[in-house]
Length: 410
Image (cartoon, rainbow, N blue to C red; front, side, top):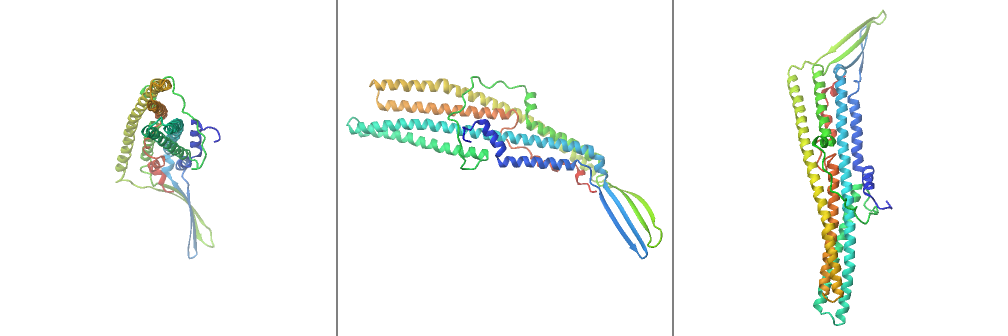
């Protein structure tokens, strides 16, 4: 933290230190553990019963386990693997969105620092002009009105410098929040934003490649496949949802005589005469909903990528115009007006107006460069994840879509 904080370092700190993001990773670990448990072999149950009637004593022991879980175990494992894949895509999206937030906060903070430096330079120049005007008024070369005009210009520049300093402090506070750092952590930032690239953002790949890189599309596809697997598992164990198979051993007989050993097998079934069709319709509807949501996600992904690409190209053009046309012209005018002022061809007010125009051009160039880098960060994120759109459903919520075998008794 003692060295100037780079953009990559800001992202690294946000990913490794932010407590909210670490909580998301812990939720993913919990999802993985619950998925492994749901796809494991059913735990058997054990029953021991002792019965005494007069001189007769009977012992019974039995083991029982869910037959439905045993039969549907391959589908359950496939379903949980796909559901964990979906949870991983959700976690990747949160990583990218959190990184985008950190990058944006870093760009805002560096731009505010650069703006404050420009405003401070303008304030020093305005203070020098105000001091000169005061001395000329005392010498009788300036009227009170002329001096007041220069003092007013200096006051306006000072107000702008104070506003820029306040904006710098506010942006640095937002950067600390995005990085998960305490409020009083000292930050050392670069003095200026990265330079504008020589070329505009490259053309986009075709639609198939765009969709193949998007994490939300992959997540929606994994969700659709998981629901298909869940529907197959539910169909496979629909008649055996509460089925139990239980071997029993019994020892019975009089207390003081020989015992009789017996072995029994028991199979219990539930007969879903009424809810079988309803459950099938519900499962098929969930699969169709997931397929439609996949199509909707694909449409949104292509639209977001196209919008982010157009915004990045437009911001590049605006930043290039400010740096190659507007700012050089403002600097040239300020230099020429200074020469004319030294030659006593213009007055001090024209010189101050020229300096104010140059200040505005420099600030506009910084803002245009900041907007380009923000748009570029949005584009890089949009190519692989939603830049800021809320996620459709948290990965933890998908646990409610597990097949009924999870709740099957022993």
